[in-house]
Length: 404
Ligand SMILES: Nc1nc2c(c(=O)[nH]1)N[C@H]1C(S)=C(S)[C@@H](COP(=O)(O)O)O[C@H]1N2
Ligand SMILES: [Mo]
Image (cartoon, rainbow, N blue to C red; front, side, top):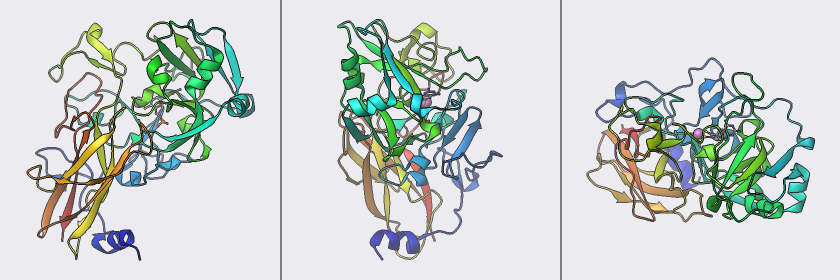
């Protein structure tokens, strides 16, 4: 039996957890309820049955942290965040991608087949995190899906480089932004109404890792995650990674599609007190996601028995930067221990940390993890920067365990 199996089978009891996943400063997690899927629809086709469904229309589901333990997130465990209705009757043989917009030289349309045959294929592990991941903890609360911790994943994506396609189509020198359009439909049923059309500055669009992808971990994208074609911009709010991709526009100004303006995926330009009504002209677009980490083992609520040494592990990521340090604390942040940390397999991929820890005596412990990015920025211990829509909560992840 290898060490990993030994640890999971004999030290961490698979017995029922003693409480749920949620820990709030000042709250006794022993009294909080287990976070379970209370939705009557038990599972989404093609997705792990333990994904927590936050909304069936549109489909929104997150992954409990312990299901994100793999270094490469399996497709069935990747969260789902839809703003509209997934396209019906997807005809993959006739799927096309059109490049247009005022900063393209000529409008050009590629079939999926052409994209696959004409351009070189690349695979990258890219971290996809919803800008609203962690929204649940904001107070006063923000409207929208109450994401806890699991609107994040890092599978291996395969496709072609966006820059290869844009260069083939031909861009004008005044190009500053790209925007996407997908084939999903608006919740109102109005087929003319665009669900969401966001984008990124041309600099991000032209990076090697900016992909037009058709596969996750070597297989077709799941329908829920954009089959048959999507954009992937690792490290940026996942709302920029357009699904069911049918059109890319190259713009000579900041893209102005639905959900680029107003309060969507935007935060105040200056710090505001919780609950402030911020004038819309004082909002700015979110670009990179901040430094963050997630403990994926053990599962919160684990009962530790017998030998006192066990492994704590998880992942850490930081927008376009890398992680230089992850530490854990077993005593509410009084002392910290440095973890072993892997290098990223490529830019915009999460890194893995692990450490052997030991609980000195019987009782209740919290395990906190804290990452520091390559610029020296650290995760805050408490929910930072309240904002009207509840974006960018990168507070430390805290789990609780008991030594019995
Ligand atoms: N066409 C389209 N693309 C989309 C969305 C959408 O509703 N429609 N949602 C965006 C948002 S807000 C997020 S967080 C990611 C989620 O990607 P996933 O469902 O594959 O996890 O897709 C983005 N791309
Ligand atoms: Mo999102």
